[in-house]
Length: 249
Image 1 (cartoon, rainbow, N blue to C red):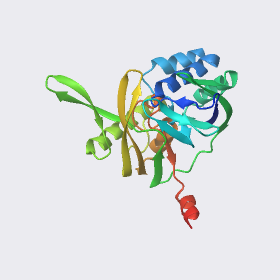
Image 2: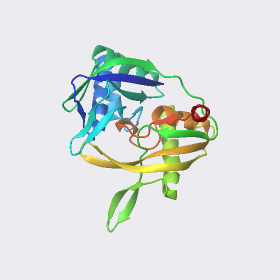
Image 3: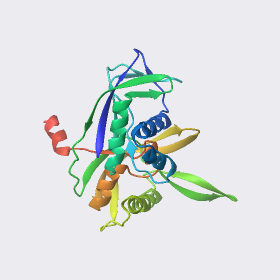
Image 4: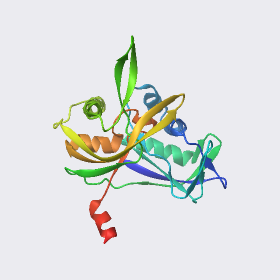
């Protein structure tokens, strides 16, 4: 299930910090805690990622070096998604009880929330990221093991992504998918770096075609592709190619 939350900046000239993922994650946990404290504790303490969220979508903006994104539009949007309905339900109820989203000194007020229709996912579906996909591995660097960020132009990225998605699917669904094989065909990608708390994570914004397991595709749409999705990584949307073609005609 996926929701769209519309937010209005409380103050004119609001500046959104460049690295806001951890603040949004904390705010989501706090919203859940308002109505479901036990669920909030589970989401905060488990290694499993039960949800994902998008970048904050700002239609009109101005980049202010060393400060952030100056919001010029009347409202911004945040998308949150999970295959666990109770998670989404608790987030919505929490926002209704306390409609404020605070990111450092910037205050946003919820102006509406709606459940989005689930798209049709078929073989060869075109996806675009709403937040970067992160895939990492561990390499030996001298005498130390080092976490290594992978990118879509590396074969190891694709191998590790398949392993991650199978592991996450089995942990949350408590079973293995009937069809385990899938692949993605990357059309374009852009490396990005995001600071979460005190650590920088590297991921990729991308457009890709997906082939293979429908169960994993649906799981990835609902919970995110790759790692650390609860910190705002791995959210994707389906590109309606027929609609794009109609708009071009």
